[in-house]
Image (cartoon, rainbow, N blue to C red; front, side, top):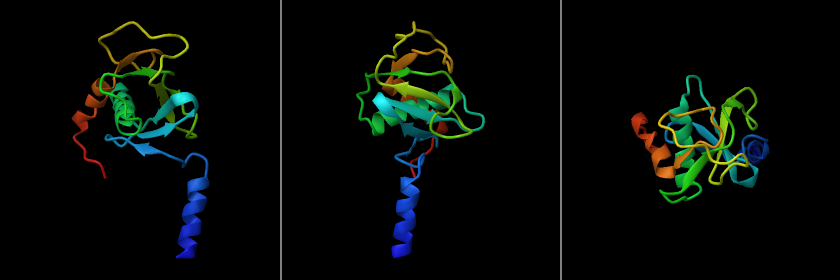
Length: 132
């Protein structure tokens, strides 16, 4: 029993294993500094997958209101929290470069792109997955 507890403490203290959230679409979301969080990509992830992860994290973990906007802080690129992975960083605050103009297309490259938290989380519905 003591051995399992020690192992759990060691694993929890490792960098990159701390406070990960798993979104409805199984995308991993990791909080960063300053209210920014990173949605970690999986093989074949598209824009809707990243926005789903951001919306679900904002709703469940940050308890953001449905009308709160979530902003893309970085374009898709190397993860800052998971070596060898790709990711996009998001936040509930406007990035230093400002909010992007409204668009009808989903982007993985337009910093400042934003939408309501509820709209982002709606991209999870197509996965029709339940929490585990």
